[in-house]
Image (cartoon, rainbow, N blue to C red):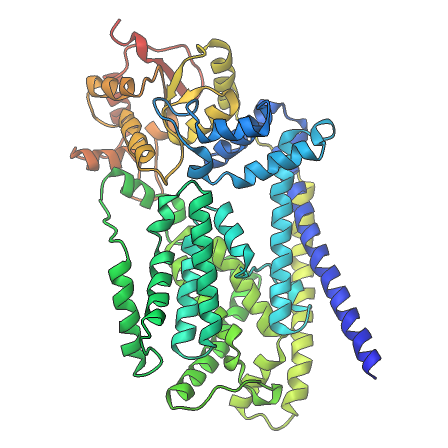
Length: 591
């Protein structure tokens, strides 16, 4: 009997792991195929391929290229940490400032694996990106599997879970904004500990991992000061200090405990002053910081994801509320929760994920960009819930179901509901996916190709280009020429540069603009029609409107003629150009 159970467990583990790995591989293949169909990548020339990298992704890939061109890896790293060939009049530590550790690893793997003779650098780079996405999906699969006890839940989810181990340090090293997401995790753990729903020792072990990861990250990211003023460090330091000072946070009302922790947190948190200047307003106008559209929620509803997520969240939330009320009344927490108990809210991992998804959901309701973190969580929680007999049993306990044996019905529903959902999704969405992959989409930007070609052929080697930071990133990647700004928003000096360069679209005088551009040693100025004639979806978020407000100028109605007139008073020399951008030689303005 014991041998039979062992074989059964091994078979379940084997097929579950196989399904998890297969899901990740299929997702990576899907991304690769979709990317090829969208950009016709294999049939493009190198310049056309590089143009598909937009914004900050162009900068990351350009540094990856520089590493491969360096005579040695050590020399490449040195040039990146002492980079004075990217931004005019500025030496930057690109490894620290942009967290280039993924690019460093990619370049080492490319050269060490002997891939130079087998695959082009760009394919190796995007292959790693797609491979990491496959690992991401595999991790999501395993998370839902562990939570629900059945790997069937993994087939329904594209969610993910960050494990506090060595991966916390790796996560922090690979993404410069990771400490903000880890702060949300720390808040979830703090609430879990405050309600005495988890062992305090285990929670504080996680805090120690956070502190150690922050310390290592600070040292290996060349003493990154952003980590020292991060909200994660402030919160974790306050919580650990309270334990060190033997503050009796386990006694008294919840409000008193909360006030004790928040007091220390507020003392240790560095005050953030939001200056409502052009930079702050411009960042707030970015699409990622806008509220999500109704189409987003409509898509979640059409795929049946949002209704099941709401159902699972309500059941878990009510169950957690019952557990918290029992704890306040002095009832001890059960060490083991049986299926017949119908108390899914007593499982600490469930409480943690409920709190975490609510926090991420609250942020996603305000910020469009947060939906990319919240949506996988929605998928995970919904998949876990419909596949969990404990959730159905909790619901039946409330309904006091007696007509059918509740345990039997819970087991049946935990298998039947996800199976029905899976078949319905397969029937409705699989043909769409196959059609999407079979259609050839065309991505071609002849104006940008012509611009990059002109720069390579006509511009002096020592030329410095000025323009919008997004376009400057593409110029740096495709031509290697020096630029006056970059699309990076974690450096005060670069933010100030971006604001100053954007003044070319303001009502400032030609003399003011000339002084600004020459202060950065810019030789060529690139004007984009898309910004001159911008019709923003959000009122008051056009670049020229934001500049007028920041400069104290009266904002006009914004007709095309009005804003082209401000350029007419600015420009004295026009290089022949027929595309949607115009190049101006700054050195000839007053000649």
